[in-house]
Image 1 (cartoon, one colour):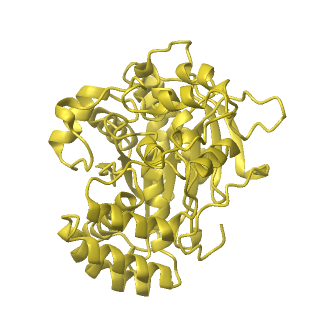
Image 2 (tube, helix red, strand yellow):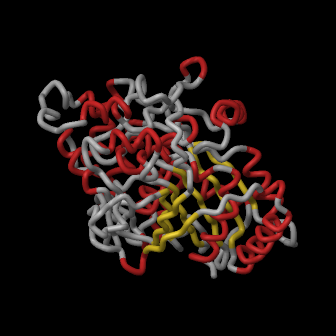
Length: 421
């Protein structure tokens, strides 16, 4: 995407990314039982510190209970009722694998649904229910903190952030505003300035929240930013989010004069993020996207996923081709807001950020099989999570592998090698 992207949707190019992309095989490491692995992490911590990384934020949601594939919106569009699926073999079976009531992904206890609350009780619940599957556990954060900081006089702050998991445009836009407020607080609280860096590692759709953040951080003011902030401020009371209006009031002048980060750099790594919103790199430091991927194509285009019906319905239950949530939760899919006011606000946001709509549009975007956005570096990594098991909880359709404890060393090594070597 161009500088000053102004909230445009990604172009979803199928062209060869060339030097922007690398391929890796993941070697799993059980860190608590690997002194050499912990030594390596300590060395990587030194490299982080030398390059100015003062804070690492682990941003995530929940695979359970959040309509992770966004089928509510597809069903609301009435694709099957209108006959869009007629003549497309395997589409009914694919949708069954994606729907909450038939995809095998359990709901959260007590019917807990988004918006999820960023508090200790919710994070403890997620740790108990899904462990380290698409979830940066407290144990993960503590192991990272201890390992990276073992040889450092100035410790790197490691923070776990749970976003609301409202998988629709309004929810992601509200989360982006909240993240801007958090960034402002972290910069001030840790006295960050020129030469310092914040590194955010974001799982799944949390990456889309950061894509919106990048557009808000554009060095040049835009009418789109002003319009979107005004819209979110106006609807904050209708959706019971009074904190949003106060945050917007606080950050707007800082965005306008470019001081929200006080000269510090914001680096972002996404894991398994669907390609949707465009990124604006002008206000960012470094940008990297990592996707769980195994090549199944026969046309030589190894950088694309494989989206062929009806074959995908045989591959997907064992995560044969990698991350199917990343592949399928594209434009046209989404959860649906729960109130009429939120639905109206969501429509207003999506008219600004995603021109694609309709069941056929979703199918078109999914079939493009794009793994990476148009901005940033990319790593296609085989996390070796396809073991032949059709138990969804073993892999969550390829979307769980990134946050496993045994992937921490690989992730950290590749981040340092790619961004800070």
